[in-house]
Image 1 (cartoon, rainbow, N blue to C red):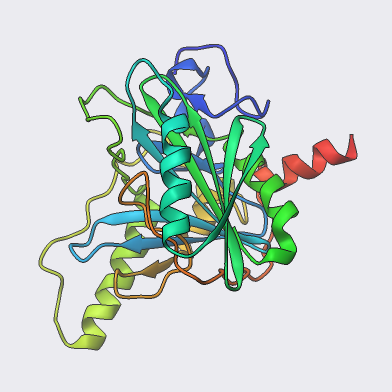
Image 2: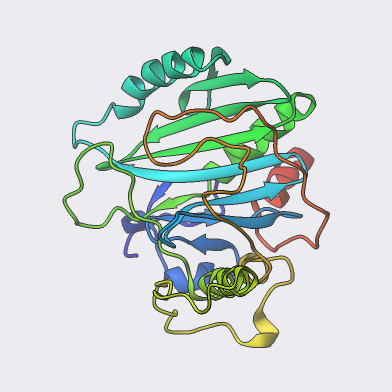
Length: 280
């Protein structure tokens, strides 16, 4: 990172090339998922959704007020992809039986889909050859609180577009950090042992370990490293409560996520920053 912007100013979503400092500095505050660096949430848990061929399809932050997932997509240099997606997404959601509405948020239009048992809020932002999209899912009674948390998370999110020539609208790849990849591999091995399938034929790939991994005493309780080590893993056969991440326009499952059990807060988490701004 060689720019001048700094995390903590709620000025995102950021392009990683615009940030000062090193990604290693964000080890405990953000989950580095390759194309997206997602800030962890105080009191939250990490869940990973895997495809049938052992590839990560989505990583979610499960919080006391709902669940948040973020994906980055390739976009044309001209921008404006989210404006197109809003219309298509609303039409697709209505076709699936959801009640939809459009609200004006910090970055423009947000799509809200209400389904039995809860709601889904889609927030999109156009960047430099990328579009980032957040989906926040939760029960109706926590709508406003989840919306505020989702915006706080997106304001501290970082996108790493890379130079690969992905076609516009293609989802940018998710690559799990080492600690999270180890947790997923262990869960997959346990499931294979329980099913009597023996060892997995193909190991899960992970991102290279950071050049300066945090020492044991430097791991923040409840931070990104600690949450990754306690992640919950779902396969494609397990029920999920939020939309899938295989396309810009997608279907909605008619379920609301369960709240996470309270855990120690993480330093620099989105919720702690949100509460700090409220106190001011």
